[in-house]
Image (cartoon, rainbow, N blue to C red):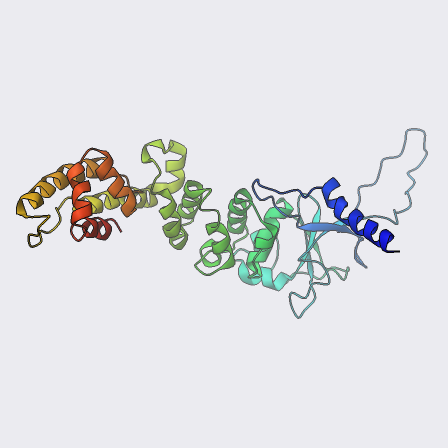
Length: 340
């Protein structure tokens, strides 16, 4: 009895050896936004009738398929408790995914009647599920837009940057304010900002095109090491003159600030047994040469005290290295304070 139990335990362990875990080290893929299910009660799916064959005298309707499955949103489905009222509108994406929403919520968030698809008082369809609007947008993009309208986060779907960018364009098409729904502390703002490390320039251009200042500012910190000379004409057009000027001034301003902080030599201190005024004059000359070299070659991304010190020492200015050991109150404090 004990032997059989042990064997079953080992069989349980060996299944993980025969089927190793798949560790995904690549980029995060988008999660599906819909699942296939049976049509809800009362739904009528319009189908294009099949033309009769040439030898048939009249068309014959084929019996409906009892096993018909449709793709329904995993968030906006008929039984979702998103509002106290049941959904009264069905949106159908270009890839045939059904979204069950509330027309009054869409109208309240749109300034053009949802691109004139929804009148102020939409007629109630005979179907209990409401009218069906066929939209040209794919489900992944429409899912982001609807989550934004309902003030919900869609981060659990892991939308790609391309889908988020397309969603902003769709929001503008349907009269939904991008600046309002991508303002600071909104779910869409946080989701877009999470792509800044991988797509800093693209996200900055996206923020600039919609004048999203609160999104452009934190994104610009990821562009400090970016070479402005590599900007293409297309990207310059997307960014626009105002935000392009801010990006240039960010680079130039940080470089000028580094020069102002680094060029003045350290303040002298009372002479000691290991560092008198003569040694301090040597330090001042060495500092002037090293800081001038570093200030000339500095880039906006150079901000670490360790990096500053390594640049000063590795270019042959040994008096600084000597004073670093015997006079840390002068050299080390000057480097740390100025490079922070």
